[in-house]
Amino acid sequence: MIVRSITFTLAVAGLSLGMSAAARADDELMSLCMATADQKTCQCMSTKIPPEKRASAIVAMRKSNDAIVTGTPLDPSTLSQEQMQGLDAVVLAQASCM
Image 1 (cartoon, rainbow, N blue to C red):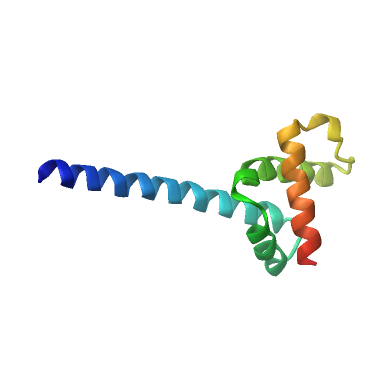
Image 2 (cartoon, rainbow, N blue to C red):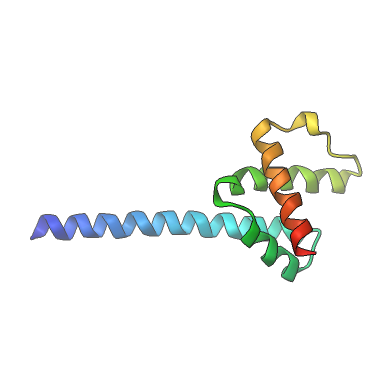
């Protein structure tokens, strides 16, 4: 009985950690998005970016926002293939939410 209780507790803790990581990714995505778009658009975009591309989308959005702040165009050659796919996901999400 104790083993089941420990196993259940560990399973719940694992789910909580996974959910909090996903929540942090959503928060970061929203924060980066709202630097250049309104909340409604960003909420829509958040639903359109697949979970498997979310991390690379966040990195790409960070680089894109940095380029906007410095006034220099985003150089695609500075993005890895994964980041480029993340940027593509952001662009497609933005297009479908406008």
